[in-house]
Length: 520
Image (tube, helix red, strand yellow):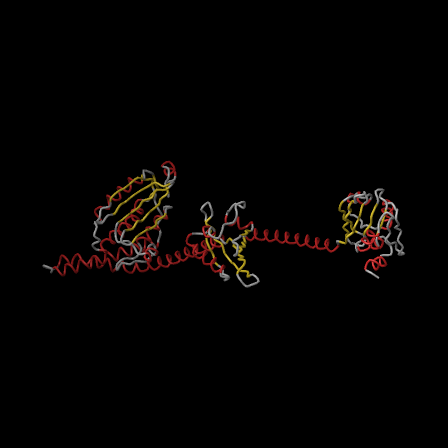
């Protein structure tokens, strides 16, 4: 028996009209899917065994027969619950009640999904092939659920990143393609409509001092090395600076080569600001403790030293007058004793003044006029007469005696620097300069002296720190204390071999306001 005869024997319920030739019958017998043909009058012309099996009654019989109307077939289908119930009545489309050309998808009561290809034939008949697409539908459902799960996971990730101020980045190390999460745009304050920065653009997002370390992290990633956690400063478009904590890892491809760099950036600016506040608070507490301890010690030592110093000073006068023709060497010795006693008294006075902060007694002063008077009064006390470059015709609330002390200390430092440096090859020059800046006035004391080394400059305002053989190291510390009591600031800048600038910034006030409230 040949193949066609075997197929004919296997498909016992194939029914073909007389108009259909053997070749059509044989072709239909070879189709494994349910197959049928309807005539132009929508009556069943032919069907194969698979189509008959699809429409068997519970007792195993098949009611299908050639010439059966499509509407009768649909009536039977509704009676036996052939199709799966639709959750929405409107989904029960006309496909169930009349033949349509084209593709139709049905779900059967047993859960299977069928794809029906209704193909018109040249003579007007309709050939219908049913294909089981349950596996495809299942895969579609799994893909949909997976996609929904991924979207939900992504939404959760973005929400968690937003709450924790953490952004993440993925960079394809082969193509350079970059993906940023929404929080990355928030942290770096960039427009989400603008593509993420390229490999060469990325370092420009960071502080110039941190770009070298960032490039090192990038280079390590390209070599497949996961960089250790690091912190960088981000410079936003508006110039503000944020601190970020960076962690990254590298994902290799199947061949073990670096493929994907994944990094996270957590905004830790608030942590840095808190740490800075804590450090400042601790420094202030430590300074207060030191000041309190120094004040107690100074008060005790001053009481013990002032009496002997007074005795020494009082004893010098009769020693000078009672001696007959004292030798020059003896007179020089007496002068040294007197100068040393005076220096000891000044040290005690400095310690007492610094450790016991006295209240200010401020009055309104025209700033430039006051500086002119100050320099004139200091002219006889210093070997270098300062030049004036004054352009701050404004009013500030000043305690004259205390501010005189602050500027006097700065001037003394400049003069002593010249005397200790020796010949610098240029005439010594000190300038008092004033300028207005917003609601403040800046008073600069500028010299062309030897300058200050960086390590010394860092400690210049530290109490009791001094590089000189004699001195308490309280001059600049007292100047800062006085300026800050006035609500101002003082800073030093210097270049070795070029000179030093001390800048004092003081707030300006209106004369009327000062008259009503004369205190600082």
